[in-house]
Length: 327
Image 1 (cartoon, rainbow, N blue to C red):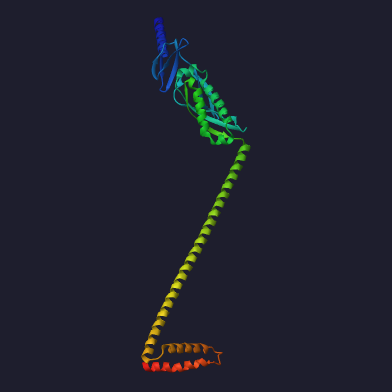
Image 2: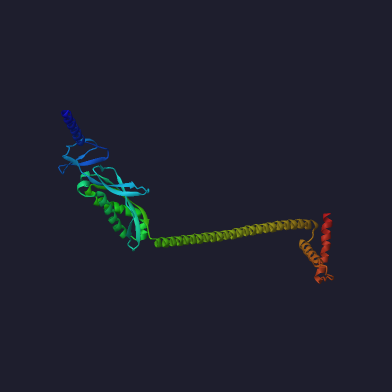
């Protein structure tokens, strides 16, 4: 009976030893193995064998975010023998920094990094999560201290690039690669926020007034251009009307002259047939027209005929002779 018990104990010990010597490492994780307190190897993902009680995985610090009973997230630093090789993100709590113009501002940042050399991350730094957090905080204070508040609020990409370069260079000896840094929130003091809101409102009002002035200016320009075009069009119309009127009057004069010339030719022809002096005929015609205009008015009661007009009366006989000759 005792032999069976001893055999069972030995079997259990063998199983325990074998289990202690077998290490299964998940993908994207690793372990640093020490042999008798000295670095021995870095385990690869998959099945690995070590010497029990002689080889032992190195215990390192890790940073975890846990949800408390009240539903709030809480950051805890614990120990583990597993080193995560995936990209990790640290959400650091808000910290107060002072800008170059002496404005105290609360800023919190997100840090994305990845362990690329597990051996360095274990032996080059004692507490890697704490070191990264403190380095990020101090670097953030230095970068923000070189900028004014307005530059801090408007230059997030510049701040992110500077922090990423500083942290990546500092953590290189720790076997860590900092991929990027993001400023999550920048919260200036309440008094500064109120002043900024007033300044922003004043800037909006100024832009609105500028836009209204520009609109009025464009409206005045358009109205003046419209008035100008209207005057030009009116002048052009008056010019065309004057030209057409002048052309019409000239054409009428030409037609009247042509008609008068035709009449004179006809009269001359008739006078030539009747053998009468054409000049006497025309003179008599003018006298008759003059007498008619003199006697047209209602108030004309007396007409005086000059002595020379008796020769005109004698010309009437010539006119009578002309018409009697035509008949």
